Length: 114
Length: 117
Image (cartoon, rainbow over the protein chains, first blue to last red):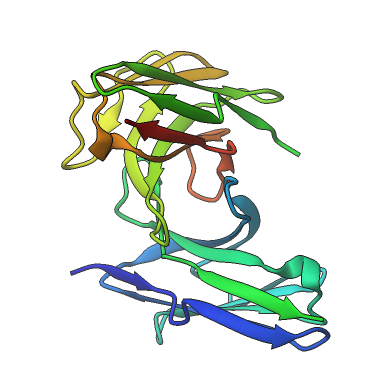
């Protein structure tokens, strides 16, 4: 069966450290993988997209890697701040999906401790 | 950035009531809109995909007669939960996408918390 797993339900990290979140998938052939941030009671906000033929993407303090052999994406936040505390969702666009709809993982709740 | 407005943000109503939720893209034309449902500590589950001027495509297990979707224009989609019951209580979120390609991100509304008594 198809699965998207974000291994940690919750992650606590000290301010200033690098947070690393993991997204693994099974029985998908994603053409794209996206990361979103969701705050409590709010809708997700798009952060980064990486294509199947890209290894790494950066945006300011954020970095995403994509390893199609390992079937894994890693999401890094460097120099983490308390304001980075939120739930981070990975979502993939399966190459077979007709309308390019997203399938989401359950998310990892990140808490950055001052 | 792209803004999607969802209204209302919170609804409490009696069992048997029909509830309408609006989703508007404020500063771009949304070729495709999506409706999701999210239970606490769970992932967003896609309910249906809607393209302007055509019938929505529902995911397996989602009753199309229960969850009516109308995408009348490139900036507005509505979800009507008909004859709502307590098990329909959830967080409903819409999103809009400009274009039909997978590399374009979705822009989400802030959700509607629906509580059926």
